[in-house]
Amino acid sequence: MAQGYINDRTTDYHSLKSRLIGPGISPQRSEHFDVLNRHLRRGLVSSEQLVIVPDAHSLSYSLEEAWLVRHAEAIRRELDNAAGTQVSTTMTYCNPAGVHLARHPQRDARFSS
Image 1 (cartoon, rainbow, N blue to C red):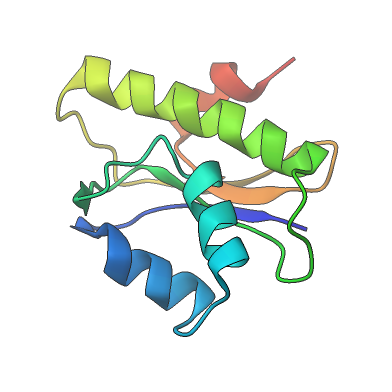
Image 2 (tube, rainbow, N blue to C red):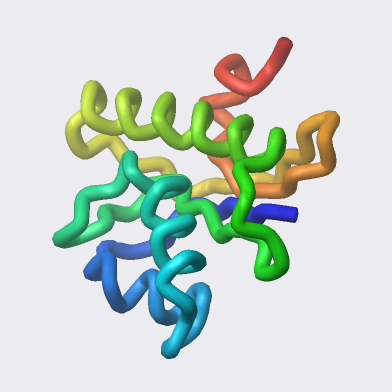
């Protein structure tokens, strides 16, 4: 199952990718990570971005990953619109499919339905 988390500090994309899925990964797994995280800038990844870590045993696009991608893109748009507003308090959220991620309480409305 894919996992998502809110990035806690600005870091470069390649270091983040290496730290999350390890060095020496297959080209297919590397590409899968890139597709899931296409909302991230390839230079520096800012804090508060949702980063998606794919399942280590699957290269196909799952429903959980689709859910995470949709919300990662929404977070990206919100951060771009807010241009620098930061909130330090986080809480844990679990969607009906069982995907866990940390998020900000002020963003509750975006995930409810």
